[in-house]
Length: 213
Image (tube, rainbow, N blue to C red; front, side):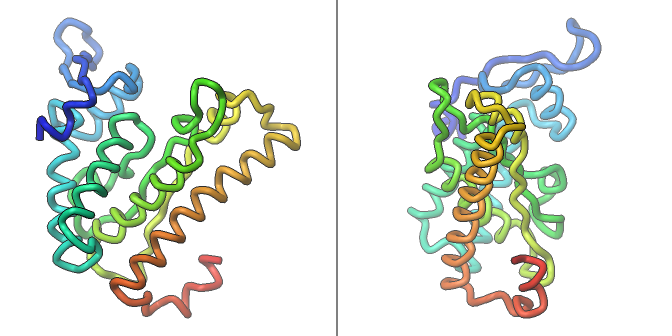
């Protein structure tokens, strides 16, 4: 576990009402006090690495067994991508998946503001890859139930526009918002298509096509 997280320095943060006796969690610098408190509410683990690694191990085993991940090398790269998302607080599993990788509602939250660079440009490629990695995780994270959708949630749109210096009430803001969501949809759709090639198409697609599109 430690080798996988060596690139992300974990800092101790004390959470709780009492700053002297509260719980200490170790999180990367991207996690501010509010994020640390949210993490502590989600997981009893002492660190982000300790919380994420068991999920990744379970998902890798399930993904390789089902064929959702084509091989061990690809599985390792995919797990690294999810670690990177989590460490930078760009993307994390939604609350239900923290409590068990199977049989839960499948959703992943991407913080759009975390993909805006310091020069106010948008890391569009990283955003698309994050959405793709998330779709693969969500496909693996639950039992193979064709009636149960997986959802990638683009969050903090207003924060992303603010970080990019774009007024969200203006046409430029609306255009950028549409572009960001299109990047997420494109990355998710590409990953979904790749999964369909490996696993076969969703049997319930005809019933769900209208609502999805």
